[in-house]
Length: 361
Image (cartoon, rainbow, N blue to C red; front, side, top):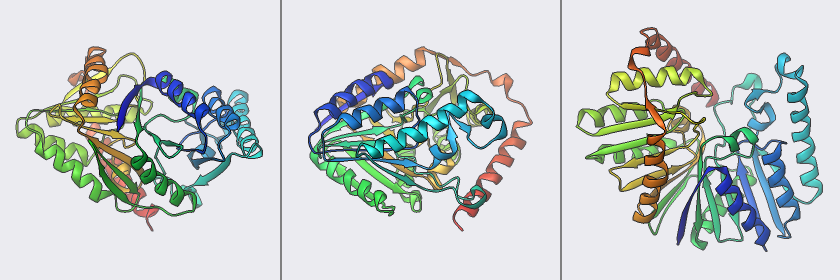
């Protein structure tokens, strides 16, 4: 089995484009965002030019409602000519893909009054010729390509077959839960309904830490903080890297408060928005995939989570991501944490529970 970290959209797209060009039998893609900009059109052109018989793309309905992270149907955005043009370009791109023989499947509608908005298929994965698999956090949109992120490329027929079963189930309208241990990597495909049992393994991993836990995630939340707080109390050094300028400002305030009260070392990544999702425990075990380690990942979202123990890949992550990102981060200013944030936290947590309850009704 070959495992390779691809840091940034440049490395990811160079590798993926080459794999698509060489594909003979199948190229299937699953993504949350797929927009009619350079990134989305790049994938579209590659898929249309590909000669493989099986070419399919699963897109979450998130893209139907949000383009460049802006709500498509707000009056302000509908009057914005540039935004409206990208919305139209996205629709045309989907139509052109289908006309060229690339199947498009929309999944997870938002429902009446957006009741199902927390229930997203958050997986990002690509499968090629029954051998090559990509998983991670990068979506196909320009703003996602501009963010700091990573993907994991896996070369192994067994992994690809396992992942293809999940893709075909999603394509047919079924959400599956499945887990499998491979050589140096364990992969969980989470169905959005029984997520807790997978994350119990992650909580056990946090509880087993003896020296250090490093997490990079833009939207880290409870119940993960509850377990990290316990790790700090047991003497484990917990370091969290988040964006210095988060695209969700309220998450930044919440994270600063949570870190301050939990004794977590919080670092703000300066160069750009970091959308990367990873957890490193005792410099031996690495958790990667699509999960943000947040409440919605824990409760309602379909995710891909991989636990990697291969020493070469773990060391590559330490060198190219952990150490590099810490060097480009600054300490969070604990003095900025306001007492009013506790009210924000209480409101967010209550609303999170309410929206999840409504979504599951």
